[in-house]
Amino acid sequence: MQFQRVHSLKGELHIPGDKSISHRSIMLGSLAKGTTEVYGFLNGADCISSINCFRRMGIPIEYENGIVKIHGKGLHGLQAPSQTLDVGNSGTTTRLMSGILAAQNFSCRITGDASICKRPMKRIMDPLTLMGAEITSENGNNCAPLLIHGKPLHGISYISPVASAQVKSCILLAGLYAEGETCVTEPYVSRDHTERMLAAFGADIHTEKTTATVRPASGLTAQHIFVPGDISSAAYFIAAGLITPNSCITIQNVGINPTRDGILEIAKKMGGNITLSNLISDTGEPTADITVSTSALKGCVIEGSMIPKLIDEIPILAILACFAEGETIIRDAQELKVKESNRIDVMAENLSAMGADITATEDGMIIRGGKPLHGAVINSHLDHRIAMSFAIAGLNADGTTEITGGECVEISYPSFYQDLKKLI
Ligand code: S3P
Image 1 (tube, rainbow, N blue to C red):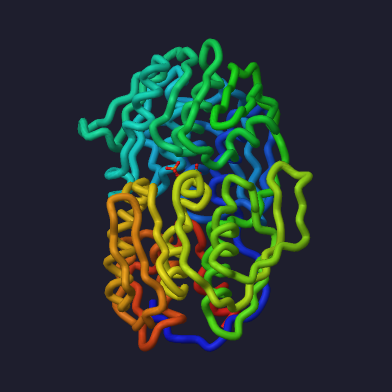
Image 2 (image 1 turned 120 degrees about the vertical axis):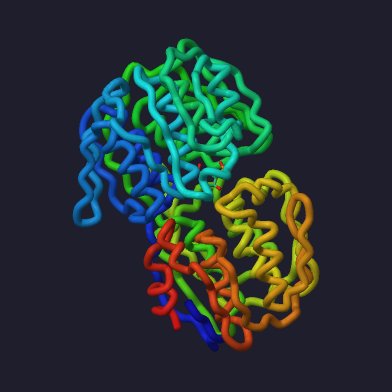
């Protein structure tokens, strides 16, 4: 995959559905009674892994003409899978599904690709064990493959050391089956798609500040779900529109849930021309059209409670920072080390190769903007967000930028390169 400088990006785009919401629609649809229909489902490899896992547990799931129909069999309708559940590259499938599996009356094994087998699972094993679950790491390294022997669970009040929606959701989903109330408190609020969708399916769930509480469910009711465009995918075009000369891009129907909109807040703080129109907030997840145009940017500090609101956008924000005047400091983001790749090291390695002034830190990075970027060979480390971020950098660098393993965009945005081309 090769990229050269462009002199303008213009047009309108409809980006694919939200990855987090698409995963949850499969899981809750499988546990509900009746047929859940999902419109705008993300046809990316990660979400297909969720579909395949639930099919393996006896849930009929049709996916035709862009509509997913999940014929849910109720909270106790899953069957023991005859084979290992393969989650591919998907951390969300692994962690959320583990919460459900911990409470079933069967045993199973979960594994995935090389990246997933390095990602930390102790963060879900600990709270699930406190709830009475039997969950072990096959190799004793607190990573997948995971072995789960379903057990009756009881509710807990858990104070999570990390602000992680995957950990929170895992515990809440286990809590649907537990005796008594289950509470999760996080250091900062993470994305709340599970809470919103559980409420829509009829679960007894409420949130107060950074604590979410669920009571055991007697049943969930099938729903029609309209998945908004993924703001994490929109982020590449937001950044591209801001840093590329003579540009104006409108991205339609993007989810702007306040637990996910950090990119908008930070891009505005950096001086970005961003306007929202066509705001819709009467559905389960608020949406808007986002228009961005070429802007003179300045650096800023990104830290604390802002981090979970833009955790997946940090790679592209680091690219943005290279085009901003002054210093951008990203801190409190040590979670980046345990994503699909170590995103602190990988951003520092690849941006340095392009001539940027970047220093990796223990919990983030410091970027001194304004140094022109030049083409280089970029190792994506098969991390979709790294590949997409450097495609945008390559459009604004001298010479040729070559991305190795660039096809990994199929994880969250299979048509990314085609959509980008439409704007050139
Ligand atoms: C996700 C939560 C985040 C995010 C991931 C998707 C989710 O992970 O990085 O891409 O759908 O719940 P963490 O919970 O590990 O922060």
